[in-house]
Length: 414
Ligand code: A2P
Image (cartoon, rainbow, N blue to C red; front, side):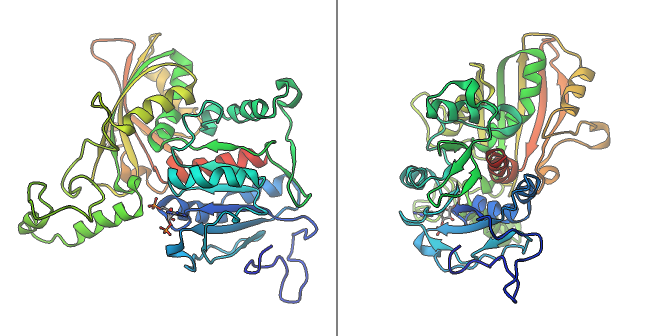
């Protein structure tokens, strides 16, 4: 335990109720703790089921959270809820090469450059890394995990890294001896697990059960992605554009892309987002596809474990949180809508929200601040009986990022 941690004892120095001080805490580092996803990871981890999981395992293990960001925000205080069994240093520390000493699990949410540099160091120090960036997602040796869809890929990757026969460890919760000689139930050897792109996570939760029921042949989607998908600064820029807008005359004060005096240096997007939609997320590739569109195609194939044809058009819209998508699925088999509804009603992580006559359909205002993927506007294609249309919405900071990472963390400690 470091100098700032809240001790697991009361002010008389006695062990706090229910805590076994003989067992060392499970130490979780959050890299990017001041960012849109990292701050949510910290808050959710402080309250969510990870602690219950530890309690269920009856290990007596407590949880310690350490917060890291860049030098800019070192010293910032982040207040987290006081939860029994949790000790946390609320002061953000500058990330350095020695930040991972004694860390069991490192959650990375500081972008690909930081992950490429520091994730291997964390693994070298014995930590399991759960990385929210795109740095390792295309690496075939690194699992890309949506727990509702392909949790088993963690075991497969662990086996491949260990170079041992699958059967010998398939159902083992392997005790991981860290460099302090203590025992936690973590994948062995320490490894990187990639958290997928937010649209890939949300769409995979909705598509996977239908793929298993009817045999997926192709996916076409158009996305409606919120400002916060580009980070805290992007969300703040939209809020500030909106709060400075009071009358129609203010339209002229919004950035004009054709104004040569405006170099756009402070803009987070290629164009103003307020009262606009921008059909570009990420850089363009030579064939006119964007980086985000290619990520979704590749990642959906990897998560669903099928080389399904996938085409996406990604659009930034002026909402703050939650990404939505209009999706057309081509199946091998025919289906009926009641069957599809039954499949989705029973699917893990899905809320069937399909009562359009009552105004019930997925929207950012419905899915934001929840951990679920909302699915509705279900329609059979008018020309093709094996083609389904649906509208999906999910909180991309939560299920599309922080919550998915924490679900992976729970899998890792089970
Ligand atoms: P900082 O606040 O110090 O810049 P978002 O995705 O919302 O833009 O947040 C990015 C997160 O990544 C922030 O917490 C940011 O910290 C952190 N970050 C950016 N660069 C680094 C770095 N070089 N080392 C550690 N953390 C970084």
